[in-house]
Every structure is written in structure tokens, then in C-alpha cells.
Image (tube, rainbow, N blue to C red; front, side):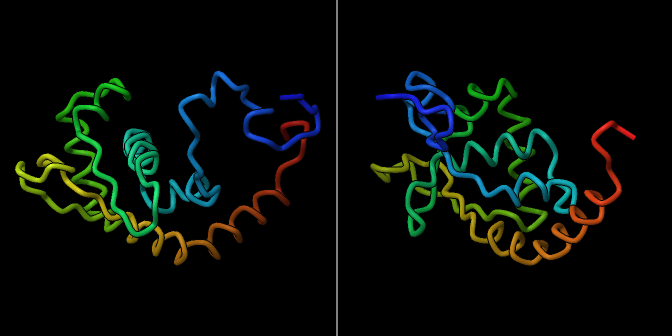
Length: 142
């Protein structure tokens, strides 16, 4: 594949090797709303892992807590606490599944639609805050 220095292609930006496992689409609003939604750095990392498994809107992701812990370098207990915190904040909901389920094998299924709804609710405020901050900041750091 030819690389174009003006290309917006993910592969052109990150390279084929970096994209060999795929890529994840994250709304910029989610990144810019972390403070507004009280999402900690660990919780954001865990959300990114959930989103990485959310391939179809109608199918809830069900990554194992162990896999998330391994990838993030967090303990399983920290992952569990963070998932509980995200649920308590109303950003996700989780549904246990039976171990006998061939597909999920007892892993929780995570519903991210509460997060989508909250993003919609805070979008106007976050945009206003960004606009007002942008007007206050100059490029020389003053």
C-alpha cells in the first residue's frame, strides 16, 4: 500500500504492523468528557478494552476480566472495582452469564448503551467548555 503523507487512513497514520490486530473507533467526545463523567484513567483504559470487543451495536461485549487485567497491567481486583465503579456511575451495565453458555463461558456481558446516552447528555456542556477554554489559551503557553 502506498503511503500518502496527507492521508487520514488509519493504516497510513499508524502503519500496517500497528493495525494488524485491527483498530477501535472511539468518539473524541468520550476522551474529552472524562472529567465531566468522573472517569478515572484506569476506568478509561477498561472502557477502551470493552469497546475493543464491541463489534456490533446489537451484540454486547464479554471480554474476561482476566484478559483485561493482563492487557492493562492492572490486577483483576482493580479491574473488578473499576467495572463496579463504571456501573455505579451509570456508564455501563453488566449481566452475568452461565458457565454453560458456549459463547460467553460465564463471563459478564457489558452494555455500553448507558455510556452512549450519557455522552449525548454531556455533549453540549463539554463543547461549550472546550470553546471557552480555546478562547482563553494562546499558543505560546500563556
